Image (tube, rainbow, N blue to C red; front, side, top):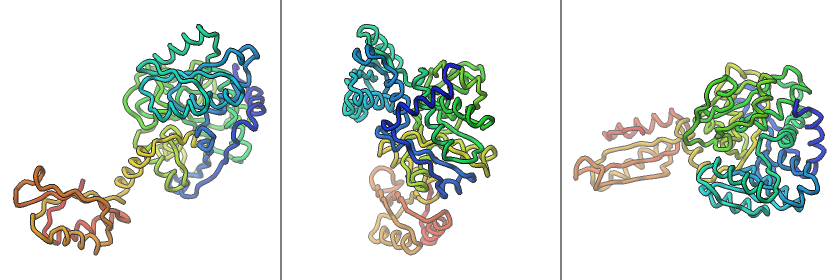
Length: 400
């Protein structure tokens, strides 16, 4: 096997003191909502906010003296870029990171802030990768692959060592799957230390590349996703071979499940997760028949989510749970109507948090106006009471 338990244990020794040994916690609220005992490995607490430091730190520690002197190069638009930049700088190794031109400025600045030289090239990750390989050949640089590299896999597998040392009895280990480095490294460790322990990978529905490959189907992926960290078309050949050999099943979850998991982590565990980092919990929520009543471990493997996206996810989840009520009313355009509506909402215990009042464009008559309300409520029962109170005032109310 190209990566063994001994490799992973050696990696743990190399990265000790360079990479945080993150906590493994149980959140009662998360477990209650999931119907299982869920242990969360908080790798979102790493210095760069993601587990990628494990693989990058180990791979860089394996460089020869000549390779260190020449420098390294990587291609990434996210967490791998920052991990390579940080650990190369700590070792005094020059690092170049090639990122697609569309990469958000915040990610470029953070990568530069960790000490790397950033090159923006290409419209896609594939074009950026091709340019990175070309620069590596021209400059004699060592290319640090984000997941298709034995040293990187061994580093990622150290997460499983820590989980299995602390978790006690487990029924399953569930890991987000992009290129496959994390789940493959952890599966190798689990197979050696806990033979028979089921290990699951998780992909989002728009990017089920590993599941398709394992099933022998053509890869067909694409579209927007909140789990961009695992939105991969080309999985690693080494992880693919390991997952097939070890019998790892890859589960596919919906976008909505990932959003639900992000919100549950934020509200229930007080933990901030990016989309990819919440995929493991999304699988527990999606497949209750597989995990109900069981003791499972999954990492929150990244916390680098844009605050605006996090805000939108939380608001969307409140709407789905019935804790935000959105109402449309066609109202008479006369004094006192808004006050009456506000009073009815308040008397029913609702809290109006947003109002849109439109006279000119949306109203069906010049004698009416359209009112849109966003109301904070406790639950669906209170929402129904607010609608009933408004309808009792002869208002025509539409939810939406």
